[in-house]
Length: 297
Ligand SMILES: [Zn+2]
Image 1 (spheres, helix red, strand yellow):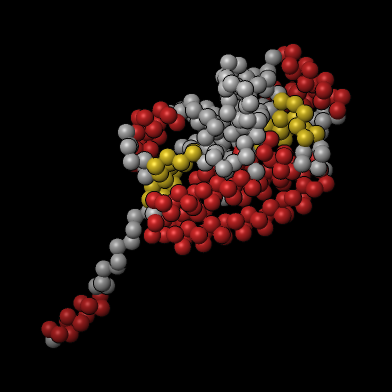
Image 2 (cartoon, rainbow, N blue to C red):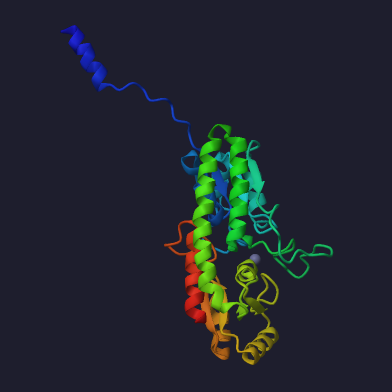
């Protein structure tokens, strides 16, 4: 009887599973980086993004709750090129987390508009080290993913094969989608556009579109009436068909410019999470390309 009882006990109480390693806690400055970290890190990472896809990443409030997230994190990935200069140093300093591994993803990227002279913010330019919106080219997404895999391997060496597998499937998925995006956009090569902020340069370079002007006077600086007048004239002369703006931009000024010139105002998510359906990095371009095609055709 006792033996039977022991046997039953063995059947009912499973042996303790091998302790699964806790996922490592990763914080990212943007939702695009978070999506790529999730894709590459899989179950081995728990990711939080500070800025949300519907926010302007240049201007994020350094909230105490963000300090706590950074305090608990093992790794932090950021865009760099001073995109986050207004808020990230405050969070890192406040977090008092000396073992935090901070990875700036901009080295390795071919940065557009890199200044050749002395670096200056004298005119309020929020792009003093070149254009930081490089995630808006899927080719750069691949460079970011490879770097993320390399940095994760360094911190979690036991999971190298898994990160490699995840990286490969991320790359394959993006390559398939990219072919489709390029085919969809091929008829529009050379089309002239105007944009609100200087953030679509990587996207338009990739797709062969041409930006002839900006609503903002300088990145981060609202337009003067004179600048707007000149812009409207140039757009009318060149029959510009579309004005692109991020969905976090106040639409009033771009709307009135579009109305005066007959251009279509194309409001785009510029980050993962900018719209509810944009969950993975590739979804971002599905959304952007879909809107561009319907505006330009
Ligand atoms: Zn910018």
